Amino acid sequence: MTGPQPGTSWRRVELARHERRPHALDYIRRLAPNFVELHGDRQAGDDPALVAGIGTWRGATVVLLGQEKGRTLRERRERNFGMMHPEGFRKAIRLARTAAKFGLPVISLVDTPGAYPGAGAEERGIAGAIASAISDWFRIATPVVSAVVGEGGSGGALGICVADRVLLQENAIFTVASPEACASIVWRDVAHREEAAEQLGLTSDVLLAGGLVDEVVAEPPGGAHADADEAARLLDEALHRHVRSLRGMPVRLLVRRRYERFRRLGLEVVGS
Picture 1 (cartoon, rainbow, N blue to C red):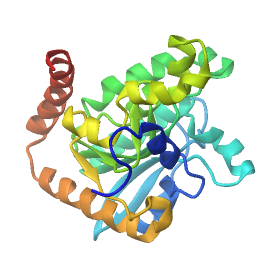
Picture 2: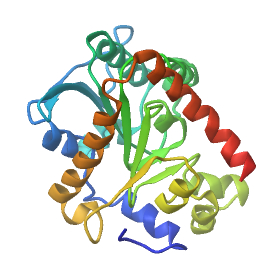
Picture 3: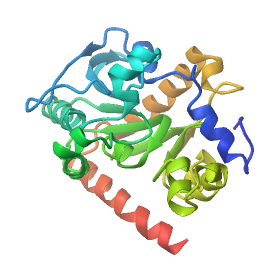
């Protein structure tokens, strides 16, 4: 596995946030060129921070979800920097239920600093929307494979990555809170962000060793931003391997194992 060596957690954070790092739409367009985006949660509206729809991937129809940060300043504002509102979590579950109805696998690509903490999101019940989404994922009766392709931050990430298999790109991060937020809480000073990054254990090597992710997906030398096509090829191979292993599994067994997987995580962490 290439990339930064242990002890350079902040460097991983920088790579996960690199301005040229491929985002969800960059991968989706390479995985499923005929992707058709679907909009709305059928309750309040649409959330541009979550791209969701159907497409043909490796000769089969799949449902694809992706948190999209946007590339230009205008796009980032429109996408809310990848921070989802309640509508986004409801949209994700709506598409997942449709996938289950028609027996389509779900692939979700995670890239967010966290759910949106603004007043409007709070007024519309962001905490309840995340909690409901997490609960609902355990009842989605179809294979679900998730990959963290950038930042996997807090409940904003967990709301779309309760899956049968959780993959993490080599220089992506997966964490309960951003290093800046952690530093502000613990030291009351964001200047301690690098120390916080080390303490959070947010890098791929630590997460794999702790059993929090199922596979670390290699990136091109220098990081995914150095060769987006190669990064997409490596991600495609890993996704295919895991989706293929889940197809054909009895639905009741699939859902039960998904539940058991997440139940084990807490026990393993406490016992480590």
